[in-house]
Image: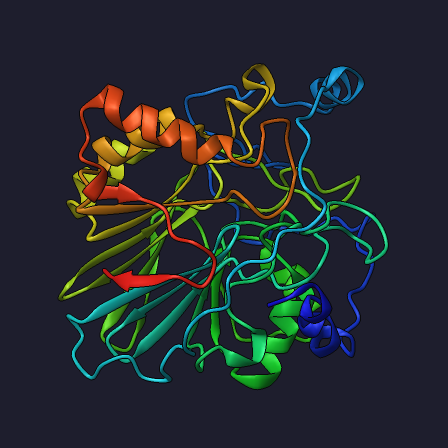
Length: 347
């Protein structure tokens, strides 16, 4: 994709209008006891100290590294197959951008936190703007059967992309409690909103919504009114684990104890600086390596970097620090790596 083609996704998304939901306040009907206080969800066993006041302190003092205005990614050499394989044990993973990953589990096409918009913001004219082209053109996506949607932040829940996918494929969107209200408001009705540790069947697959250490909100009245989480797809040929957006915490070990070592883990490595503010809710590469070890993952893929400048580290820092963290922990780089946008590998 070249600079002249960078708005190709925007042209496809332009007919979908996102409602401004800055003042919405989702109502939770089925409220859990342990991580719901009657008004808001909370992380278990930890105080993230990631408050609005801390955010103001960061915004006043931040010193972000310089990022390029635009980087052309090499185009994907071929479109992903509509059906990767008839064999459930035959997997392929393709990195799209940010936290968007296409995982093909035999004939099943699963997409995580799909974002094709140029900006991750309540509006299309301001807010964090992409600086790197998407690895797969939107209309080159194979038919999507399921979307794993970790939470409602704009760089993870891109409502226009989800509206486009719903119009074309009507995939099942699996997400946390309360996020369904955001989707329903835009005519997206094929949604399963679940509490932590709940699951549903999708053909031969079972999809679980699991804990993460993070927060939620799309406006000024809805902070932590919807549930964030990670997701796991269980099959007879192994498990896919998608960490979503999370700080490092005990949930990784708990998930490994429940499900065993995932065959493929998608772990965030970017948007981590400064650590005093981002540390509780965003892993850095060293945290991601610890999570990989807790999970005992066969292979982990680093995500959540390289696309939008959300925090203060340099664009190249996550990959550089991941290499250092793997060496420091004695983890073979063959078991934890990154892919370029549009690049794929067997999983």
